[in-house]
Image (tube, rainbow, N blue to C red):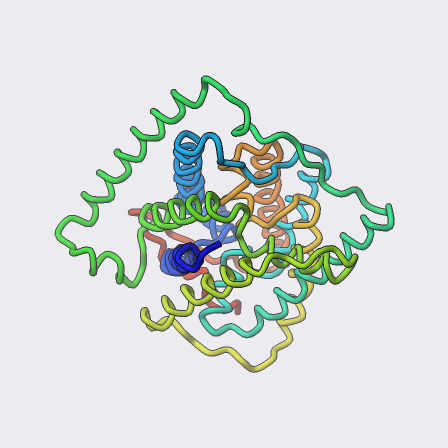
Amino acid sequence: MNSLTLILAAGLAAAVGFAAHRASLCSVRAVEEILTTRRAFMLAGFIKSALWVVAVTLFAAWAFADNFVPASIWRLSVLSVAGGAIFGVGAALNGGCAFSTLTRFGSGDAGMVMTLAGFVAGAGIYDLLAAKGLAAPPVETTAFLTTPATWRIPITLALVTWMAWEMVKLRRRTDGQSWRQRMLASRYRLSTAAVLMGISSGLLYVLIGVWPYTRLFSQTARHIATGAPTPPAILWLLFAALLGGIILSAWQGRRFSGQWRPRPKWIRYAIGGIVMGLGAAMVPGGNDVLILHAIPSLSPHAVPAFLAMLFGIAGSLAVMRAFGRQIPRIDCGGDLCTADADRPEP
């Protein structure tokens, strides 16, 4: 891979991090919005991001039909659905999913180191059990995009129509603002974040394959636990760029607040990270992999695993509320959210 491609890939990863932070995206917050307002605007933002990735992927499959090789996808199984639910429980304990764990860390919440370390530990435990025959590993299957199909034409046309309509709506909502004002806005509209994250992630998928950071952490855990090959160095570069985009957004938007002193809640973060890692090893992948790769790749396990993750979050939040923990109100009316996914947990 030449240096120009590396620079492009790093810039795309940084754009994903910047947009995710500016829109305060988080699957836990998406469920909290549903529970507190009976609306699902943040969840719709995730769906839009996945659709933008689908569009870019389909265009790549058309343009580079002879050379385009989609990354692996996985069979639907009880294991993948259970893994999604377990990941959701861990995310609720942690107070944030894969996206918000990194945005909170990039905003100065050092407690998220415990979550990340716990994630590696949890994934490593499951991989070690699988290597000893005590747990079942996920099973790959044939990628739909590798087989010729007439459904590509109507789906592509429908996506083109949808993308044009989304851009028209976004233009109307930001009419009168310059491009600089839009890009440096203190808070992004969910539709704006979906465009930037979706197109950037789609191009990264074409260039690199499965790139989200929970893949990197899962492969690192497998290497430590079983001696499997180390993850590709490019994934570390993309992780650094993703985190760099988040830090840049936090600094430029004056949303950086150092939380460095260890606190008792860090134990909960570590436990949540371990549970998230176990679930991600079963799926495989965290919610970032599901949204930015598996669902757009039409992987059979993706949607059921993601829905199970949402139910796992919802069930955990319901239990917490029953024990007296208040669920914050998340208001995402008008394509903007008024709660920060990167804020430290109380």
